[in-house]
Length: 255
Length: 228
Image: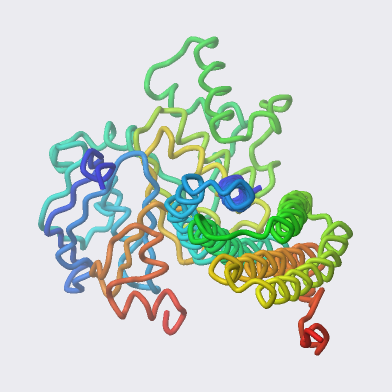
C-alpha cells in the first residue's frame, strides 16, 4: 500500500518500557504512529493505554515513582531532549471529564495564546473564533463568549476543551476517553468532529468503547497487560485480526 | 450526525446503482445482438461480464466492512443488507445476459425462424423495461411500483412458455431448425430468469421500506407444465 509507505510517522516509539516503582506497566512497546490519521488505543482496564498516551506528552513524569527506558521520538526528535512546554504546545490533550477553566468561554480559549505572549485583542479574537469553529462550537456560543464556561452542557464543555487545545495550533491531539462522560448525541457530535479534525491534525485516542474505535479510527492498537498485541488498519482488525487474543477481546469474550 | 457513515452509505448506494446500470446495459446489448444477429456485440457482452463481477465484490466487501465498523441498525442495516443481497441478484442477471449473448453466437449461421425471434425480441423488450423500472424503484424506495413490477412476472412466464411451445411445434415441422431453434428455448429461459431476479429486487425494495421480508411471486404452482 503506497499510502502507508509515504506516510510520515509523527511518533516513533522503540522498545519503550515503563515502571511505576516495581510494577512493569509498559513492556517493549514499539509503534510507528502515522501523521494526520486517527489511531485508537483499546484494551481492558489496567492494560496500560492511559499510561502510554501520557508518555507522549511527558505527563507521566508527574508520577514520582516512574522509571522509563527506550525511545520515543516526536517528528524525528527524542522527546526527552525537548522542552516540555513546547512539546505540550504541539501535542494537545483532552481528558475524559471535561475540565474547562473557571473563566469565561473567551478566556478559556485565549488562556493558552496569552501565556505564549499574544496580547493584541484583534489577534486573540481571531484565534478564539478560529478555534471555536475548528471544534464545531462557534455557532452555539458566539453570542455569549463572556459567559462562564460552566454554563455549557457536558458535550459543549468537551468541545470547548478541544477548542482550547486547538488554540495553540498543535500538530497532535491526544484524547483520553473523550466521550465516556457524554450522552450519545454529544458523543456523535464529537466523533464527527474528530473525523473533520484528522484532515489537519494527528489524533491518538484512548477508548474503552470498541465500537467507537471501529467507527472513527484508521488504525487500532490493542494493548494487553502492558504490551501491544496487535497494531493494524482498523478494518482489518475488526474483520480478521491476526491474534486470537485480539479476536476474543473485540468480540467481547473478555475485558 | 455520523457524517462519515452517511457518506459511506451514500457511496455504497451509488456503487449499487452503477452496478444496476452495468447489468441493464448488458441485458440491452445482449438482446440487441440477438435480434440483429450481431456476433461482435454478443462477444463484447461476454467479455465485459467480469466488470460486473468485480463491482459485486467491491460492494460486498464494503458492506461487510460497514457492518463490522459502524454497527448499523434499523433502516441503515436494512439498506446495507438489501444492497449486499440485491447485488448478488444483479450479478446473476448479468450471467443470464451472457447466456443470451452466447446463444446469439451459436445461432449465427443456422436456420432461423423469424416469427419466434420477433416474439423473443418483444419478450426481451418487456424484461428490459422491468429491469429499468426496478432500479428506479430501488433508488426511490417505491413499494407500490415494486409490487406492480413484480406482477408483470406472470406475463413473462407465459411468454416464455408460449415461445417454448411454439419452438417445439416448428422444430417438429422442420428438423433443419433444431440446431438454431434450441437456442430460442434457452434465450426465453434466460430472459424468464432475469425477470424472476427482478422480482427478487422488488422483494428487497419492500423489505427496505417496511422491514418485512415477503414473497411477491412464487413458482410453486403446477401450471404451464404441459405442452398439450
